[in-house]
Length: 218
Image (cartoon, rainbow, N blue to C red; front, side):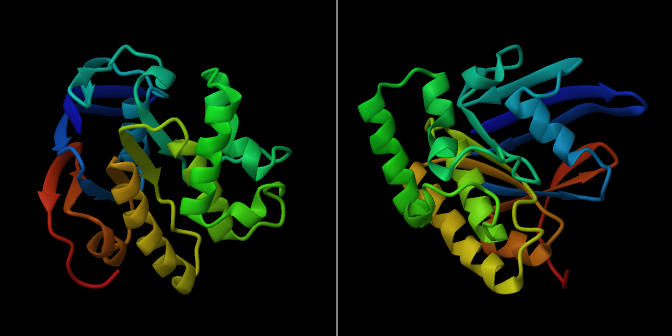
């Protein structure tokens, strides 16, 4: 589960204050709102990449407001994927596990499991250069999931994909959620994307998060 309680953020002239919302354990929530409304800032606060000036972040019933990112049990896929240009696909999947000093055999099993789940076993020796947009997103997703987080944060992961690839990713994301038993918070501007994936839709409007139902066309 994810709970944000009276959260306050400040970055230059941008501020958010008293933001509260909750995503139930095992839920899939879409977070929508206008460009510049603070959606990415909220994701960064939850995963520990942005400091907060007030309020609390709760992940899996644990207050992680002051915890380091690696200790929060959160996987994060930023909007551009942020893949390392010189590291292979296999290296991306093992990166967080090596940082956490997993044993080599355990790491290899987890990397193989993720590669099969994400359909990228044939790409393991490749670097990101030359991969398609969909392949890059699968790698970024695998890296975020590698250490078995309880929460997965996705920042517009499908925005740069063509329609056919996006639909394939809908199925993959739902399969990943069920296989990994993660609670998902997915930032998107697309109502159709929210309808296809989310159990609940949250809208960030003038600094407040409220539940909504996606309707109409994109």
